[in-house]
Image 1 (cartoon, helix red, strand yellow):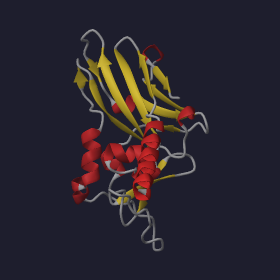
Image 2 (cartoon, helix red, strand yellow):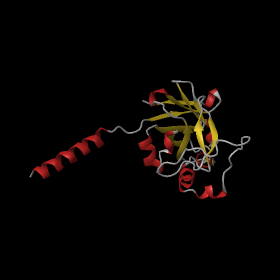
Image 3 (tube, one colour):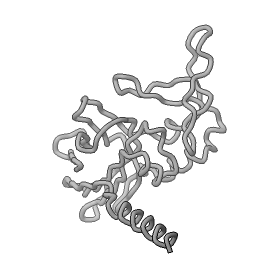
Image 4 (cartoon, rainbow, N blue to C red):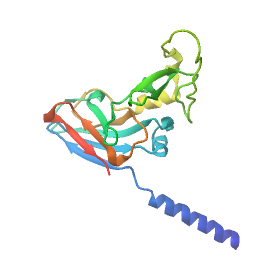
Length: 205
């Protein structure tokens, strides 16, 4: 009987924990061309659920849906999206899978820019080594991507789930990966568009 009671208590606690977990916040905005809906993930555990890796906690991931208005054809370009932080003014545009995974890992510098650093491994499933290789030696050598990096399971997942770049008259969904870390949702602003007349700004709570 004590064992059954203990099991019941544990199950109840797990259910309450799952119920109390808040879903990632979403926001919606629109311009004359389309409606933009976005869900923002900063929690590494949430990111791992989405893509099978937490990307070593170096990225914010946005789930994006673009829905054209009135059957109008629109052109989707990932570089039209940007995230800005109120905390430190950091700005970031989305990365491709090939920029995230590879022989060279990508690390955030103090100014918020991603810099390439020669490593033994890039980001991988279940985490990935960020340790440096060959610290000594001659002049700086820019690390290059090996052809077999294209077969990385994580890179395939990232590319497959990315927001596609194309012209469309129908709703399109996908993920965007922004190099940014140690940020709170309340400080982040997702911005679409460079022109004032078509710009969409989304905040998350």
